[in-house]
Each structure stands twice: as C-alpha cells, then as structure tokens.
Image (cartoon, rainbow, N blue to C red; front, side, top):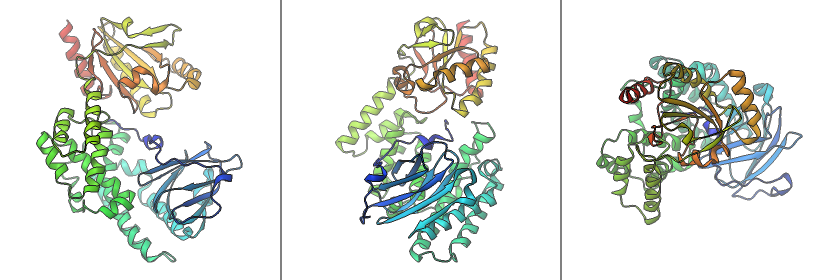
Length: 459
C-alpha cells in the first residue's frame, strides 16, 4: 500500500473562491462564511482550509493578515500551515477571526466571533489529545492492544470535556459527541498506515480482529454523511477496505447494491472511479462488478474511460519513451537502456518517504551490479528546484542513473503512468515493455524476489 503522510496538503481544490481583502463581502449573507485574522511566522504565504467535500487556499498578506469569504455549508474544518494543524467550526452567516504565532502556537492562539467559544473548546480538545497520545508518532508506534486502549481513553476523556464545557450551544454538543465517536473509529484506519510508516515496515497488517469494533458503526446515516467530515471520511475508508477485499465481480456488485442510501452509494462510486489506478484494486474484477450496476450514462462513460486508461498499463504493453536531462550533463532516453530491465524510481527532493527508500535502492543496485538491469531515478522536482536537485544528488552521492523530468508531474512519461504519489516505482523489460506500472518498494521482500525471478530467467 502506497501512502504519503503529507499527501493531504495536495488535495485537488474544490469550490475555490479566493478573494483579496478588498473583495470580501462587507455584509455576511446567510449562505456565506467569513474567516479572517492575523498569523505570524508562517512559512508560506497561504493557509489551507479543508472541510466536508471542500478545500481552499487562503492568501496571507505581508503583514500576516488574511480574510476570505467561503461559499460552503456549516460544519467542521481543518486549517493548516506547514507547522500547525487546527480543527475549526464555521457556520453560515457568521465570521470567525483567528490569530496565532506559528512559532508559539498553543500559547498564542485565540479566536473572535460568535463561534469563538466553540473553537476555543476544539483547541482544548486538541491539547487533550496531545497530552493523552504524546503526539502522532508516539501514539502510532504503540502495539495494537495499547493503541486501542489509549484510543478508547481519548474518546472517553473527550466526551467528558465537551458535556460540561461552559458556553457551548446544546445543538453543537449533540453534534460534537457524534464527531468524537466517529473520530475514534477513524483512528482504526489511521493506525494501519501510520504504524507501518513509523516502524518502517510497509508490509505491516493488523490482526484479523482489529476491525471488529467497526461493526458497531451505523453506515447508513445520510445526514451525518453530508454534515460531518469525520463520518464522511469514516464511511469512505470503511467501503474502500471492503472493495479491496472483494475477490469476484459478483461481490463488488452486491457490495454497491447493498448500500441502502442513494447519496452514499453515489459518493462511494465516485470515490472508486477517482481511485481506480491509484490504488491496488483487482481492476478487472472491480470493473466487471461496476459494469453490472445500473449506472447512468455519464458514470458509465467515466468508468469506461478510466478502465481503458488503466489497461494501457497492463503487463506486456509497450512503454512510451522519455528524454530527460542526466546529472552527468547529457540527455538519456529509454532507448539508451534497451537490452536491460529498467527499474524507475519517481521521486522528489522534498519527499521524505522517497529518501527512506534510497538505502534500499542502493542495496539492490549493489546486489545486481553488472547484471541485466539499470536503476533509474527520475526527479519530478519543479524546474525552479533544478539546482537544488543537482546539489542534493552530488551531496548524497546518489547512485544509478539520475534524471530530471522536463515538466515535473506534467511530463508526458509521468502522466502516462498516472503517477500521483511519491515515491512510485515502474519496472520495464529489456524490450521496453511494462512489467509492472506500480512495482513494489525496494524496502519490501517482494521487490528483491521479483528481480531475482526475472534475472534468473535471463541466464
């Protein structure tokens, strides 16, 4: 399973409606939300706001001030800079002012506006979480049993905090109790990839009983699906897991037909179509199962288009070529590597998980030295970071063939292989045909076994 802990920072923008300070409505209408304030020592000149099916960048002026009008429904949001992560509650027809110093966050954060008490409470809840868990890394490193115990403690203490909190509207308390419970269940899914990340073992799988408590979840609550981002995310993760476990097209069709809510079924179907090719689904099984559903014409067309784009990456199909700048000053094409298996590492200097794989990649290069395989690293750093890439490669003395993609993620070769997360590994055969468009990570036993089997057949 591929994952990048910071991938949320790069979600596709939805309903983007950024305005300058001068363009913000002077009068708040009932369908609008205004967020404004002042922040100090923020690394970038933007804040990133995420809600339920909503995301938006907010520009920060040179003096630290910001203001923006949002066209979205009331609910829970998260705002991020590169250092801090804040849970907010915003409602239509109201404005919220946010102030903090990114270098002294917990002591400096404050709010103004009708929802200031609610947001002060949410900050207290966040501080309680940090106190109980000790932070994300420490929490995620726990074994299953201890993690579940601490997760339950966090849920109970959070519920104890919200009920008597002075000044909270009763309507919010009812909604927040649900939110706390959904966040509790969501952490079961988070544990899987975060634990694997921190123990540096991507093959980690929880026990068969790990998910048992999720059987308690009501998976048909349309109102909460539309209003609570925690429930929305929980249901998406829940069905994503079930879809991955389907072994026949009949199971796929039964799963989707078994979703009693039309709203939830449509959202899960849309999620699946967006994820096809990005996740390790059994594509033919999934496609056949979805094809048997009673889909509208547009959804069916989207499914056919997505399926065709994935099938062109099937084993044995020819790979497109590339011509990229080589760290040695020349240009390298795929044709230059013919006669060898080619293991391609798509990476960037800003990608932490990419750097974790480097020692494992170098170990493979050493093991298969002088054998019929070339190791190629293609950087998708932006053009403005070209010199940074060169310095990094020289400083770290990176081995193999080091190339720089001409247009980052928009390079034809990178787009053809539908690379959306880093690192990504592609394996081609000596004739330039695809062996795997999503090859295992070098740190996994599967990669070494795969290369052993391929090279032994060539001897």
